[in-house]
Length: 263
Image (cartoon, rainbow, N blue to C red; front, side):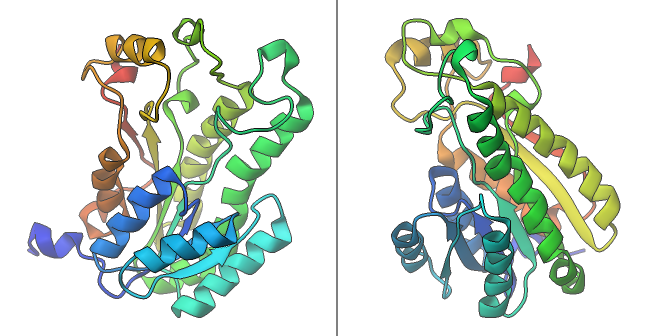
């Protein structure tokens, strides 16, 4: 049998990370690059893409893309394959979140708009479908094809709105709906793309990013591990699902939530 160190290596593999210039994207890109993969960073902001790619080892490349455009998304996936010389790993970590500035989005439910809801599903969910569909032939040829979709605890459970009392924070309905869709898309694709391609999800809990102290205190009190996540907490899950450590795992949604959903 191979050692754990050997199973964890991604030397020679090519990875495309959507949302790669973001907070979660940083943890994902660093993990894949450290384990030997060459990474293509996909994000909406071209300058941020280039900065993130320049900071990674292994000849990372920047692939700017607005995921709300189907044609642009498909072009970006093809460009990444061309520049990397193939594709073994696809990670979708791009999303509209509670702090996204969009009219009709981070509002009380009665003021959330259909337009914002549709826009979020387009980026959070539909673009994942588009990317996997476009990348599937290359992932299948790889022989090591692995897809990781980032869902959320709110793809499994509803929000406890009392956590947000007295703050300007929001938990839009479209966020949970899109993340629940990603969890089901994971299961669907695992059955459709197997045995050549594995498809799994990671569902983080709340990640500490300067939220109001009252929110953080309430969140910690409701979490068995008594803290919010940090981006580093996602590195182990990414390393496990990307390569041969999880060679017999597909259709799985890995919760990284400090026990939040165990109550």
